[in-house]
Image (cartoon, rainbow, N blue to C red; front, top):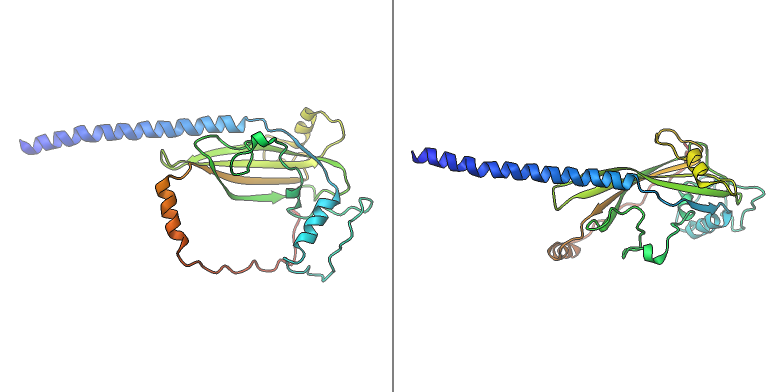
Length: 246
């Protein structure tokens, strides 16, 4: 008789736990659906720039003493290249063009902008990876006008309630743009709903950003305990002898 009562009590306790799991699952699904809709439909401003060689040239001069010499042994050119004989945009140099065109009020405490953030409480941001494509070959640094179009392709929420990680996949497309072209026409030429279709873009970059909640005081204190532990040596990046453009 006592055994039966214990079994009955155990059943009564287990049912609310299963109900709680279902509630948490629905809450997690609701958050994922809300952020997926909100972020992927967010219209981001177009970023325009002129592809003059000077920013790229200055970056080369800054890095020339920090990176291995070029495989062909050529000396670094200190003279600014001319737009009359333009060179292709080097790999990753697009990052020094098309800065976010936002005001100071649109910057967050960590110095990043508000364009991609899912909002509070996900205030911590990490870069998780990405890739780069040149579907039509690198654009020329000839001073012509170009545009960078950004949009959020996908949003994924991982982790249990209270410890969620919001993973935002951002796609950036760069292409030439004539002076005075309407924004809608620019969008239709360069951006496509199918990410495999490059449209009229010359550079396509994908970024994965992870947004998380701020750490508690206890978590920060635990992190500080790891700072005093011995570090480890990391070997330098091996020399890169060649690049591919596609």
